[in-house]
Image 1 (cartoon, helix red, strand yellow):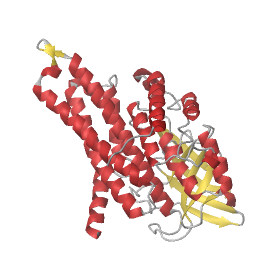
Image 2 (cartoon, one colour):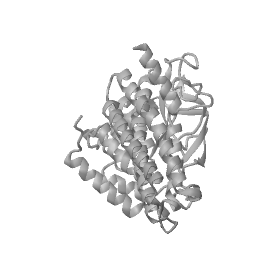
Image 3 (cartoon, one colour):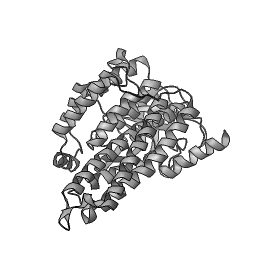
Image 4 (cartoon, helix red, strand yellow):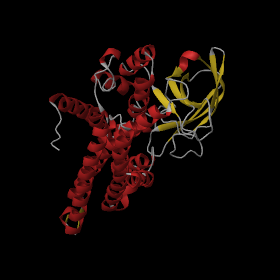
Length: 380
């Protein structure tokens, strides 16, 4: 495949690279990670000015009409800078759900607000014991006249600490593990009965635990059709996984650059350690792993827009499994080449390795997706 970025994509890539170089130095990032919010709202507005918050949405809703390959380009650059702003949760994950399920009025209100940097969204879907199974939903929604009454609990709501609105999954019919009977609702975080307990995750970003105790929402809060949200959830998560794969590739590239610089400057026996052949071989292995991961991320991005769920999931699972394995290998090797300094908070590679570890665990780890890919091969 002859895969090349267009001039517009290259221009966006360059703009993002300059923005990150100016605003996301390592010490600047550490300061943001330790702040209460965990990111900068000024940076979020700057990303809106650049246009990347509007990238995947239709032009009629204030977007730029981009696709999954455009998102891959953005996520790779965000990964290189270890950017903390909740682009994945607000734009990629929740944005795709609103795009696919929302009414015209919901799209006009929410997507325009997201594109302009005026709204932050978070998806509250995973529950205790559900692991990576998207159909495992025990939270309930019961119709009462012109309202819905929501009850339940959600875990690890990424970006939940700062979200203005939550997209909450709830069971409106069927058993806990049924593929039918799942619906999505738009919930204001300040509604009575909504309790959010935010916390910092291992990689410096933020998540929250959510409780819903008799939360009453209008009928207009329903996103899409009743009982039929699972296919859109699966597509949104596949889209987000492809974006995570691109982010991981960007981080692996940053790890390689930092490690190579360290090998050039660290002195041992009167010479840079990068002159030792064994370390050169390790560095080459890291670069090869990154380029192979880039190929898999590209495949996932190309297939992420597919309406065929089997074709989409096969490519996305293959990429997530492979990149999870290679990201761990690159991170471990970088730590080894840095010696005892490789795990300290003062070095970027330690933060990169933490984020790669979190990416592997998000939305299905390497073992989970390897199992899915194997099952699809056997079924074929």
